[in-house]
Length: 245
Image (tube, rainbow, N blue to C red; front, side, top):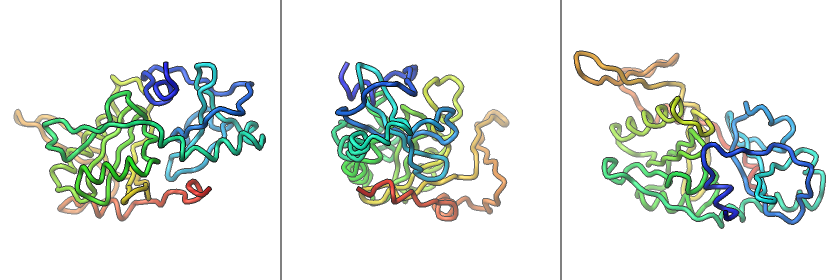
């Protein structure tokens, strides 16, 4: 199996080794987004991304996914390899598609084709903007192998569908790939700029034979829900240090 297929096309049941006593010099390093609640994080080298997200770093060594640890990063050669992660992620191919029912207003990654880390690729962000005819995106990375993207300025019905899909995937009990975050990402032009804890949930139930969409929140959403305003009120800037050379 190829390097990229293992790192970015693994099955949801992939077994990710956490710490390995192995020579890590000379192997390419790639980023991987994790939730800060990950149990192994104390021993793994990581950089805050924003909100509840961090970025860790992995290598493909002897057909296994190996993490860079806090001890590894003390090695100057490994540290220099880690600094190349932004260039390495650009090498991973990608393909976006929009099911007919979404009318080219919400795009998804091909299942298992690549992971959420393509959000760090400026060409990927530019392509998504081009497909949606926008300069600003909302991106869901609720799970390891589930990404969906729409325009920040999309109309209310499409945004409502987007967020309902986001929450449905995030809490689905029949999916066994890794849960990442209930937050969404905001990207502008060619890079991600913010993470957003939405502060609400969406549920579907039946009433009088009809499907009804219900919102639950501790906040006052007002008489008319304004997704863009919710985002602006809650957005958190991503860690700019992550992108410095």
